[in-house]
Amino acid sequence: MKLISHDLKDGEKLPARQVFNGMGYNGDNISPHLAWDDVPAGTKSFVVTCYDPDAPTGSGWWHWVVVNLPADTRVLPQGAGSSISDLPEGALQTRTDFGKAGYGGAAPPKGETHRYIFTVHALDVDKIDVDADASGAMVGFNVHFHSLASASITALFS
Image (cartoon, rainbow, N blue to C red; front, top):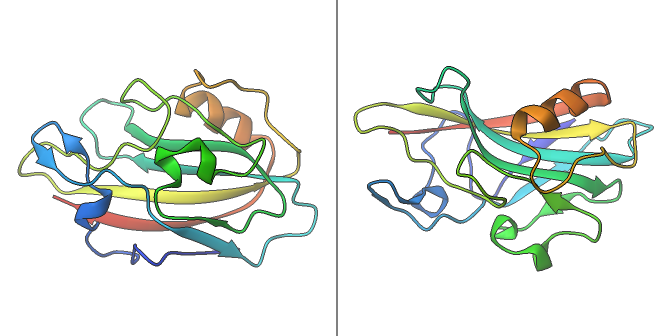
C-alpha cells in the first residue's frame, strides 16, 4: 500500500497550512491532501489518522481521525478535515486530543521538534463501531483487529 500527498513530503517540514491556529501558532489548520493506492484485496473500508508520538503527554497526541471511509475511496482533498461535505458518505471524523472531531494541526511546545504521522489503514470490515466521541486510542484498538495493510507519511515540525 502507498500513501502520497500534494502537501506533505516524508521526513520534511510540515507546511504552515497544516499547522494549528492557536496555542501560540498562527497556521492555517487545514488538513493535507492524502491519496493512496496499491490497496490490498479484501479491503472493505479505510481509516485515516494523524498522530504525534512526541507530545509530552505520556500517550502522544491524536490530531486527526477519520473512520469508515468506503472501500472505493482513494483520496481526501486538502481541507477535508474541516468540512464533513468533503468526506465520502458514511465517513466520520472522531474526537481528537483537542477535544473535538476534525483536523487539528501541529502545535508542539516551543523549541521541540515533533513527528506528525499521517496513516491510512485498509480494513477487512465495512465499518468499525465507533461514534464521533471515540478517542484515537479507541479507534486504534478497533483498527488493530481489522487491519490488512497501512501506509504512512511522517512530517516534522518545530
